[in-house]
Length: 76
Image (cartoon, rainbow, N blue to C red; front, side, top):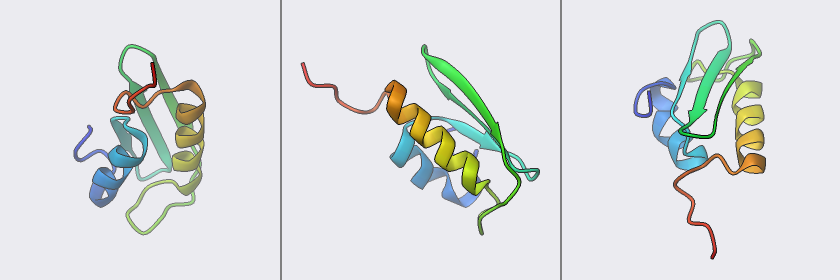
C-alpha cells in the first residue's frame, strides 16, 4: 500500500504524509497511521494520477493535526 496505493503519485504521497494509503477510481482513499488511526475519505473529483483531490487534502490535514506521520522526528 505504501509504494503503489496512489498509483504514480505514491512516492509523493508517502513523502508528504508518511501514511500508507490506497485510492480507488470512485474517489475514495483509505489511509492508516500504524498504531494510531485509520481514515477513509470519499470525494469524486480526481487528479491526473486518478486520486481524489479533496480526499488527499483532508487526510493530509487531519494527519498533520493528529501527528499521524510516523516518519517525522519529534522534538524531545
